[in-house]
Length: 317
Image (cartoon, rainbow, N blue to C red; front, side, top):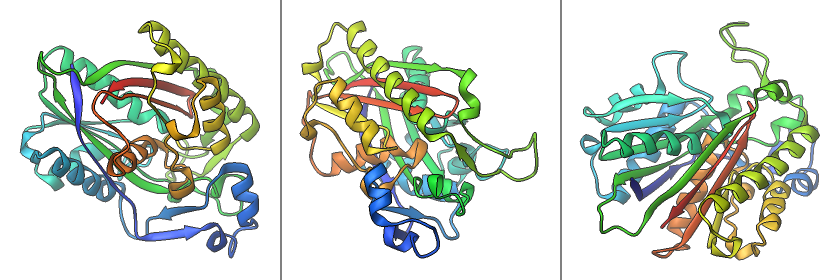
C-alpha cells in the first residue's frame, strides 16, 4: 500500500475578507461568520485551475524530495477543469514535466480528494505505481452568482496536494482504509445549472442549503463511525480529524459525534472558505506545516459533496 511523504498547497494572491465581499454582495461579516465560520477566501484573477494545481503539486514534490519524473501517476480532483477535455491532469503533466506519469481527473466535487486517495489505493495494491501525486484544485469563483448571497459567500479558490509512495514491509506509517459512497437521488439539491449537455456555460452554483446541511451531518457521521468499526478502532484512537472545510457547524457536529476536542480537529474554513476538492489537502498541508502531526498519529479525513458523494480515509502518519 502507500504512505504520504509530502504535502503542498497554493492560494491565489487575491484575498477577499467578508468586509471586502460586503462591498458588492448584500451581506456582512457577522452574517457570514455566524452561519459558516468563514472569515476570508481567495479568488483567482487570471489563473487557471491547472496553474493552481501545478504550484501545489511542485510544493508537495519538494516536500517529498522527489522530482516530477519520479511520478508514475497524477490524479487531479476538480470540478472546475481548464477544458472539457483534455484532462487538467494531462495539462499539469505537461507543465511540470512528469513524463512517466499516467494522468486523469476525478470529478466528485468536494469529495474528490478522498476519491483520489481511494482510487490510488488500487494502483498501489496491484503494484502498478511507486509514486503518485494527488491534487485537489478548484477555481470555484468562476461558478458563483454574486446576486445569490446564500452561495457566493461560501466558496474560494485554491489547490492542495499530497505525494504518495509505496510502503516497504518495515513501514508502520501509511493508509489504513478508505471508503467512498454516492447517493445520486439527491443530485438536484446541490448543482450547477450549466454544462456541455445543457449549454456552453458551466453555469452557476445552486444549493438547497438546509437539506444539504442535514444530509452532510448524517452521512459524515456514518462514514466516520463505519471506518472505525471496520478497523476495530475506537473514537479515542483518532489523533486528528481533517474534515472537508465547508461549514464550521458541520465540522463541529462531526467532531461531537466522534467525541473529539477542538484541539484534535483541523479547521481552516475561516482562512480558505469552501474550496471543494482542494479543501482537505489544503487543510492537511496547513497542519503539516504547523507541525501538528507526529509519527504514528491516526488521521481521519472525511468529505461530503454534490452528487451526493461522500467518503473518508484513515491514515497512520
